[in-house]
Length: 151
Image (cartoon, rainbow, N blue to C red; front, side):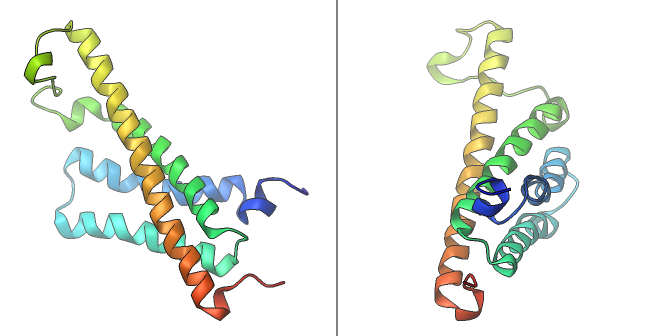
């Protein structure tokens, strides 16, 4: 598997997907209003801690790139989950455009625009989360000799 995903990222594609999927329970809990602030904090930070632990334990070649990819996949899963739970997340009715845009689009077009922007926001959130955690992992791997890649 020379030059494939695993050698360059240090984690297999199923591993990337598995790490990214650790964040899905928080999306479900948030959209359905199932947890309070403490539960939400656990669902936010425990998956990120696991991401860091796995990447550092495996001593991947490029922790930043690996977690950036995990974040990208996480963002896609986040966006899909939000779309699937859209009506449950807004029991009083979906959000609508306001200000100068209020009432300028048909309801169907407005719904599509809002869903596209929501998905884009999820994707951006995942990528930024991956980049931030990847930067932390990269710094830790550089600063702590025991976490450096073996040669």
